[in-house]
Length: 339
Image (cartoon, rainbow, N blue to C red):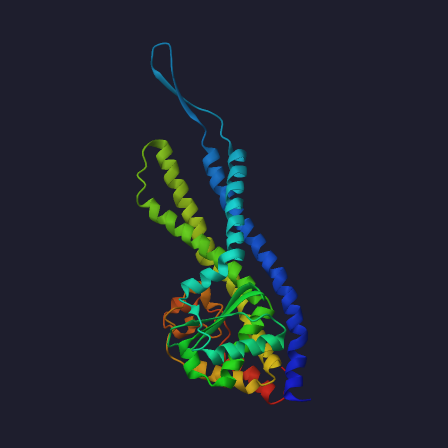
């Protein structure tokens, strides 16, 4: 059996299964985030509803008498769930409609000039034709660190982005392997899954940050003021847990296997394991940090930018298997072995 045939036998069935699996995971992730957000709404609603209405009356001697009416926990829970359910729905719609643009914007990506980056456009177009996909938009990031990623919510609404460092470092065969890897993410619907998850995580983190900042300016006055301060504190804490702990853990669980699958799928598309193999070896030797990286987009890159930062905190969020493992798999494919 030839190398290409072996790669195809390894990748073809898992790739089709991966497409279906990623579509299901997209729905599951959206449901999980809806549950989390509605849970936050229920907790906040319960806090609001648990405090009864305070009224002041006067007795026959003109002395004030304060009474507390019944609490409305159930009403508060339902109201909180509805409010946060609407917010989650708006966040999901935003992720589907504008999540890709947001990713490109925060990454500093610019449309690649067809004349200046003719080779990149030609490679993307040729691979799109070979994979039976519409040609995705092509973007470039001015950054010396070699890297690339794909984003989009469907093959017809996708984009491939490469750094100037990658374009300078790779020859045509190596660049073709890298772009084929990214085209595989588009075909397998990895990009839609990560765009939605990253957008919802980012929205939770942003709201948490806004609430925490506002808490510094809240000056509780009386019982209502204290209750509002508690509400802001609890909301900020719960959203921070979703944005900075639960969300990244979900993204971590989704990311690692898809990189190895995209490597094998790239070989299937190009019929040439040598290009991507050499590219990954160059990426492994790279020691230039990706200046434009952020935790939301790191999971989309072919080479995890967090692995090139010395901080132990960054490594807690690694979303890729080590490059050495991915290289070992491609070496076995190149030697005609079954993986």
